[in-house]
Every structure is written in C-alpha cells, then in structure tokens.
Amino acid sequence: MDDAVSVRDLVVERGGRRVLHGISCAVPRGTVTGLLGPSGSGKTTLMRAVVGVQSVRSGAVDVLGRPAGSADLRRRVGYLTQAPSVYADLTVRENARYFAVLHGRGRAEADRAVADVGLATAAGQLVGTLSGGQRSRASLACALVGDPELVVLDEPTVGQDPVLRADLWARFHAMAAAGTTLLVSSHVMDEAARCDRLLLIREGRLVADDTPAAVRAATGVDDLEEAFLRLIRGSEEADA
Amino acid sequence: MNPTILTATIGRILRQLRHDRRTVALLVVVPLVLLTLVYFMYVDQPTPPGAPSTFDRVALIMLGFFPFIIMFLVTSIAMLRERTTGTLERLLTTPLGKLDLLFGYGIAFGLAGVVQSTVASLVAYQVFGLDTAGSPWLVVLIAGVNAVLAVALGLFCSAFARTEFQAVQFMPVVVAPQLLLCGLFVPRGQMAGWLQAISDVLPLSYAVEALQEVGAHAEPTGTMWRDVAIVTGAALAALVLAAATLRRRSG
Image (tube, rainbow over all chains, first blue to last red; front, side, top):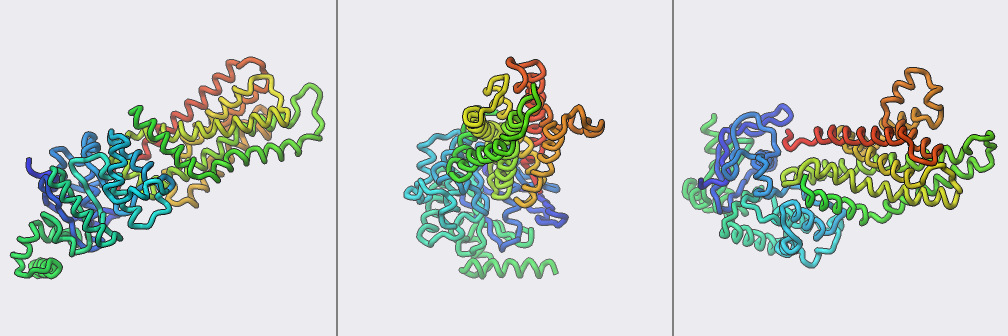
C-alpha cells in the first residue's frame, strides 16, 4: 500500500455541469504532491472528493486504504480550505486550541502549530484583525495541529511573502520526510518545481501525473510553465 | 457525542460571544429597557379586583419571550456564518459529531439565555415589584428552556437561508405567529377554533401557559411540568431536524 490516495475514474458534477471527467491518479505516501492547474480547472473539487465532502457522480476515491469520507479518516486527514476557514472572532491561539481538541491534541500542540506557521507573536490577536496572509496561515495551523497522516492543502501559499513561502515549503518537505503525505494545490507554476510529484489538471481532465524531472524530460524544456504549455497543446492536438 | 469535544465546542462558542462585548451588553441591557417601558405603560392602568395587575401578566410572559427572540436570531446568524465562512465544512472533516456541534450551540446559547433572563427577572422582581405566586427560579427555568428551543429552531432555519438578509426574515416567520397566538393578546380559550388549533401546535403556547401557572400557583403544578416537558421535547425534535440538515457531503 504505497499510495496514500488513489483516485479511479472520478466523475463529479456540480450544478448540472461536469467538473471532473473521469480522473484517475495517485498520491504516493510520504511525498509532497502538487496539484496544479488554472483557476476553475477542478482542483478544489478533487481535493474535496479526497477529504470526503464532495458528492461524486461515479468513480472511487481511496484514502489511507479506506473509502474517502470514512469516519475513522476524520482524525487522520487534515484539510485546509481555500478561503481561510477559522473563526474571525477568536484569537489565533483560541482557534488552534479548539481544532487541537477536535483532533485529540492539547494546548502544547496548538501553541506549536501556531509557532510553526510563524504566528507566535500574533497568537493573542483576533483572527479578524489579521492580514489576509496571516489569516490563511492561522487556518493552516488549524489543519496541521492534529498531526494528520494526510494533509490536503488548497492553495496554502497564496498571499504569503516570498520568505514565508519558502519557509512553508521547507516545512512541508520536513513533514513529508517524517512520513506525512501532502497534497498541495497551487495555480502558480513556479511552485511546481518544489513538489516531489505533479498532477496537472485542466478543465477537469488530468494532463500530467509525474515528477518535475520527468515532465521536463518528456517535453524537452527546463521551464515547467513552458513544459505544461506543451503538454496541454499536445493533449489538445490529440483530441482534435 | 464526545464529552471533551462537546465541552470544547461550548467553550469556543461562549468565547466568540465574549469577544463581542457590545452583543453581550445588548443581550443584558435591551430586556431591561423594554421591561422599563412596559412598567411605565401599565403603571397607572386600573386593575380589576382579584385579577393580577396587567404589568404582572405582561412582564411575566416577556421574561420568557426575550431569550426566545434573541437566541433565535443570534443562533440563526451564528450558524449561517459557520456555513458561509467554511468553518462548518471544515468541522465536518474532523472527528466532531453533528450532535456535538448542535448540542454545543444549544447549551452555550441556552446558558446565555439563562443569564439574560436571570438579570431581567432580578430587575422585574426587585425594581418593578413583579409579583408571582410561584418562585422566580421557575420563571428562569422556563426562560432557559425557551432559549434552548429558540436555538434549536435557529439551527434548523439557518439551513434554509443563504444570506444574513434571508436569515433575519425567518424571525418574523417563526417568532411572530407564536407571539400572536400564545395567549398574551387574546386568551387561547377565547380564540376561534382554527386559531386555537394552530396555537396548540406552537411550542411557545406551552411556555406561556407554564409561566402563567407559575404566576397563579405557589407550588409548581402538574400542568407546568407537562408544559416544560412539551417545550423541551419540541427543542429536541428541532435539534434532530437540524442534524438532518447537516450533510457531510455536498455538491
């Protein structure tokens, strides 16, 4: 069982429109897998299916050896929604402590999670008074506080300054080295190079599922943005 | 339900309330201002011999009514925020059970309702000389049960509102008919049959009857306990309905 997540022929419809057209892919354990694609390509829908909150039309999603959404997965999976979902009328620390209790953890773990996202000095501040970037890091702290086996992060680095962004990616890799599996979405291609594996989706279809090095080799270009462009053009020509 | 998670959820909701000092102040002060208005409205009205004064009759029912209206509104908005800010979706991916969340709200805002009605009762009895045959603590008990009922209805109704504008519209829909038909304006026995039938299925009618029992009898009566049980049952039924509106999976 090497894959933390395996998706087979996943079809999702939202509001009568097909958002995912039979996606099959896998996320190996202990890796940082990047889910890349433009806004509206279906990244969030795929992530929601993995954490088990998305109604699916057909196909199967297995997470840590169990069907996605199984009750016992709730303590093993951490989820960061795209919009920061923390309580604006609580402090950073109060938010982290609440989510810590939900995951069976204590105050020490909560304070550590807050420090790990660089918010130690803002811990006593109400989330509603934070900047957008700080708010999304507060939300990230709440996703990581339970020390889950699988972490699903929907655009965790949007709005962060470059230094913090580098810190966060270093932290993701440290977690992966310790055995955690991370599925991280982004619409910024320069983050693709930081991932162990890449899933590129466009208009609800998987365009690539490989390592950055293999994507570069297959397309013959070094720049991943350019490589993706070639993959997309190649798949469009194949369709035509 | 998990006791640790339930306790943490109650604490979290009360902490959110505590950070909003103005709301806390409004919760406590507004009922006192309204009681003062009612007192001066009726202070010079003649009372038929042998009947309770109009102030006693109206103020007693108002004490049960404040937490009902206020907690309904507060809960509808709080739960709508959970839905619109994504915290609800996130909570449902954690080990938190639906009942942990719903009972968390019921208990947290139920407590807020008890505090509100305790302060209001204290002022009504001590300052305005409210006179009831039964104990003021029974009034607070009934007000507390009313608060829990309001929270349960608020949790349920919030599922049908997409915006805060819609959520506040449920207040007149849910609260106003219960106020009109509860027996405060026209005794229930004197209403047309079909109005009485509607009144009979509205839980607030039983809360008002329970309060009137406290007003008229020195000891808690069987009717009062039956009414309290009916209101509690209605609250539990509304919580179950609210649980059915919480879906872990959505489109």
